Each structure stands twice: as C-alpha cells, then as structure tokens.
Amino acid sequence: GADPIEVKAQAVDTSLDAATGIAISASSTATIDAFVLAASVAIAASTSDTVAVAVGGLWTDNRIATDIEASAERTSIDAGSGALTVTASDSSKVTADAMAAAVTASLSGGKSGAGSVGVSLAHNTVDNTVAAFIKNAGTMRADGDVTITASNDSEIRVKSIAVAVSAAISTGT
Image (cartoon, rainbow, N blue to C red; front, top):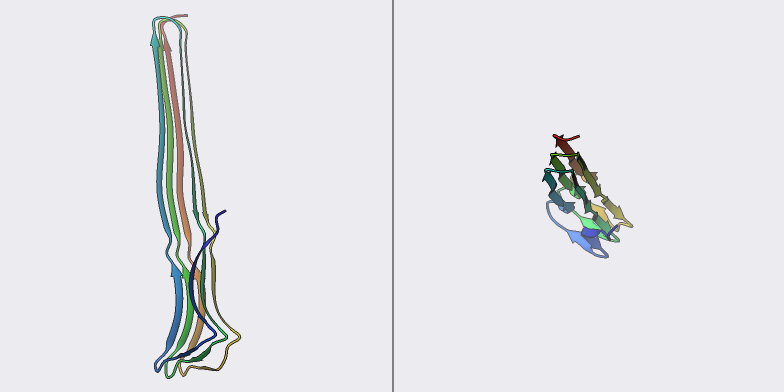
C-alpha cells in the first residue's frame, strides 16, 4: 500500500497556558465516492452460421490511509479553570458502486451461438491509525476535566454488480 498521509496536532517540548481550557485536536474526514461502469455488447446476424461473444468486466481499488494523532509530549500544560482535552478522530468513508454488463445476440439462418461474461470486482480499504495521548508530561494543571479520546468511525459501503445476458436464435439446423 501507499504511505499514509498524516493529520497531526502536537505540542512537543513546549508549554501551553490558557485561562479557561486547552484543547488539542486532530481529525480526518477523508472521503472517496467512486462510480465505475463497464458495458460490452456483441451482435452477430447472418443468413449462414454466426457466433457472438461479449465480455464486460471491471476492477475498482479504493484506498484511504491516514495516521491521525493528537498529542502533548514533554510539555507543561496549565489549562487554568477549564478542561484539558486531547482528541483524535477518524470518520473516513469509502462509497463504491461498480457495475459491469455483457450482452450478446446471435441471429442466424444457419447455426447460431452466443456467450457473455460479466465480472465486477471491488477492493476497498481504510487503513488508518488513530492516537491521542500525553507522554512524558511536564507540570499539568486543569481545574476542569482531563479527557483523552481516540475514536475511529470509518466506514466502507460497496455495491458490486455483474450481469451477463446471451441469446442465440437460429432458423437453420
């Protein structure tokens, strides 16, 4: 896979001071909406022998890769009379609709043959890491709540449909 992109909110080797609270927050809402369509049609007509073949196929590959981090490291924090919150969240979404169709018709006064193949393949991945933390903290003060949260609400929705229809009509033997 590809190297993930980074979404980071970091306080490193510093001090944070606020009278009414401190929030460190990182979030990703990466979105892929994919619609892929493949169609194939074959028609053969003759007063003698005929053969018609159609192949309709597709492959769709959708990937999201993100490292999401909210953190304070080697940092002194004074949130005063307020709260200290460190929050990392992911709500990435992949929506993929893949449709393939193959249609054949063979019309003959002699021998007739028809064949169709429809293939639809969808591969979708959300490969994210989500982290929220305080590491090697210096002095910390918060008169309000201290909340550290990491959440991953990623979602993949896929429809992959393939249809193949063949018809052979012969008036001969």
